Image (tube, rainbow, N blue to C red; front, top):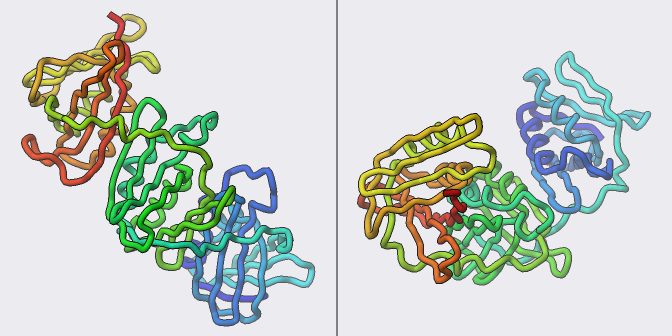
Length: 381
């Protein structure tokens, strides 16, 4: 095998396919990147670890078609540091892989192609979503997924197709994030529980790729979902299990709420929470014209700060919130103001969650469908 390829194009392609590979893989063969040089002048690069795969096709000058398997992260590191000249890669008589670029040359060990698993093929029904909307929705939802593998279904983001809409939902039991975006496709009803880490990489990679095609395929224990934009495709094995019915937790009535500047509230929360002990809640008091934050930490450290707020529909409210969970919600709102709605519960012994949504101005609700439900913490009196 022998081919020549543009340095920047090749480096970007290798970087893309290795992003989804785990830093430490129990099977060394899965650390490889499969490179297929075809006689039509195309170069296909793939990576797969049995759960997620990435594949892209680029143009190259192929002198001798063939297939090689080489350590992915090492190849990515080398390609990103090569001089700005064409790259030549070829196989040697001793089985090694020779890479040259200008005056730089490398000899890389080849890995056994025949031992590499087949890259998943997706043949199911698909639909289209706007790339920028999908990337924004992922950034607004995926962070709320659990990072604890003890409950695998909570480490994913639930994708739900219904008619002309696609919903993204995530929860870790203490909060729920939800966002709806348009869906255009033959698939009218579908659900897929996708690992949050994989979905976040999809969002970063395809954020400026125009429309993204999403396809559902497979059955049983090998159900997969595929995301394609341009010359790039990412597939992911779905998480098995029943995602909790969290939609019913969102309140129908939202008449008691406060509107606050998103940036001002976030900055104040960061400052006041500096004195808090780890995992301790921050006390919030929402009154007619302001929200006051109070914190008490170790060594008798205390902090307090107030931010302008507009309270509507009810009396003053005092509650405790996890400051980090709140900050992540404020970062996801994507609007100048934020609405904090105080919900009611039928259980008098249980604190009611707050609902966070975007707000264009003090008087006008936001245009997107982002919703974030956060459970308050018990405050020590």
